[in-house]
Each structure stands twice: as C-alpha cells, then as structure tokens.
Length: 188
Figure 1 (cartoon, one colour):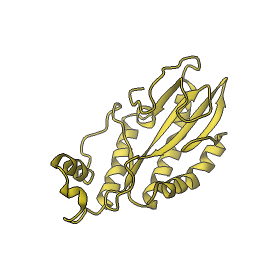
Figure 2 (cartoon, helix red, strand yellow):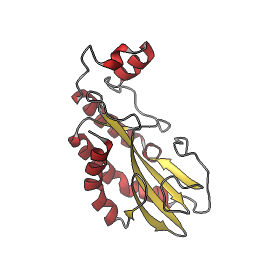
Figure 3 (cartoon, one colour):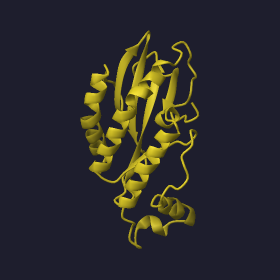
Figure 4 (cartoon, helix red, strand yellow):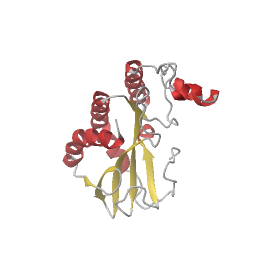
C-alpha cells in the first residue's frame, strides 16, 4: 500500500471530522489548519519515510502545531506528537490496537531480502512482528502500524475519538510561546 493510498484512506475518514471542528485543508502532507487567535493550529498525518513492506506494512504518526504560518513544519512553532497528549489509558488503547495489527501481519518467508542483511537490521525488522508487552510511556515516539485499509480505518476512528481532547490541549498552549523544536522532536 503506497503512502498515497494510505493518505487517501485517512483523508476519507478524517476530513469530515476535521471539517466539523472548523479545520480546512492545509499545505503539506495530509494536513488541516484553522485560526487559533493570531496563530494557526495545524494537524497532520505523516506516513513513515521507510515506505511499505508487503509483510511488515508501514506506519504513520499524528502531529499538532501552533504557529504563525498555516504550514506543516513552520518555524517557530509549538509542536507535539499525539502520544504526549495521551494519558496512560490512551497509550494502552494504542498498544492494544498495535498488537491486533501486529498479530494480523504475516511473517516474511526465509528468502526475504531483509532477513539476509546484517544481524542488526534483521533483528530490527523481525522486532516489528513481536507483541508489545510493555506499556507505552509518555516519552515514547509511537507510530501507528498498519498492514491494510481496515487498520487505517481503525486508526482513523481512534484519532476521531481522541481528537476533541487533543484539540483542547493544543488550544491551551500559550500562543506567545515558540519552542523552536525541530520537525521530528518527540520531546515537546
């Protein structure tokens, strides 16, 4: 499933939710924006740069930004990925869904190219097929795994269910504060 297809599925299921919350499509990735005082609240989904694997699938994340410009990755901005906006129960819900996705994946055959690279790469690849037994922490940079359209629809429902709380948190950010975090900062 190419990233364009993943974005299409997510857009189909999330666009009405964001439109209902007063957002319009923004420039860059699969993103939405709305004015927030003198600034802009921007939300986007980003599919992993590592692409699609027929066995391991792929993954994406959701990020929130408060900035002067309505552009993904604008600087300066206040940014936060969704895991930092979840409590323990929300992170455990993510872990439960992740484990369902992982259990539905089919392990690669013995001749899969990534199984014949160096040991470190092989171990990282195979770890993607293991259950997540330890609870996620607030500091974990969680990417939402998917192997098919149904997984993306499940994640879209998860996002829709949590979006009102996430938006309240983002709206409460000090509009005058700019932390200058780099684009992939997961410490914010």
